[in-house]
Length: 228
Figure 1: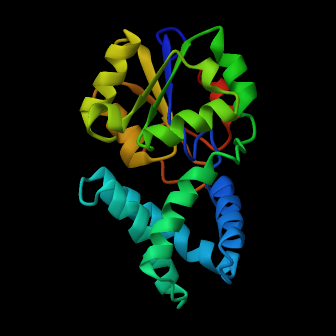
Figure 2: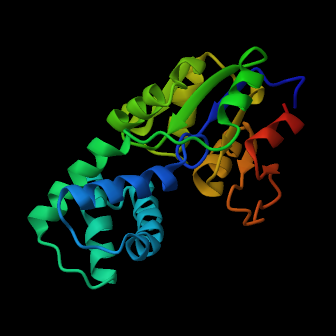
């Protein structure tokens, strides 16, 4: 792979930016600010799988951005039998986005792997996350300068794994699929999506689920050095 790759494309959330950790800290903060008596660990236990399911629906164009932001909170509160008024849920959905980027924990080895790769390859981002939040995440975490191009789904109008977003990102990077590799945590969105247009892939299985479907797999960012 080293001999032919010129461009390395990363997903952001759950790949470089530690979404679960930063999200948990954000909920802790906004619950306190709004005097909500909610057991954080109980809430997060139900929220995290609900959030992943809403993002799947969002990728499949089955829910809107607003429906995702409201629905994941509403469903999580319902699941732990905590009654929260709709006005408060809508307020929290905005507060969550506002405060999320004030926490900027990265996965272990993020800066080290970016420093290792930056002089060997051109680095890029392809993300399904919301444009306003993704830019702030990278800026506040001091990693934005590593990337030559940043492609998000709102710019393109479709989400990974739709081939249009990968082709848009390749065009922006002036790259060919055969000289590019996609690294991400989602087999469906990142790995299969990139593979289907001819890109190389590395599956970042940070949860150690071991379900790589035959794709190249790493469980730590440092292990990317094995391939690049």
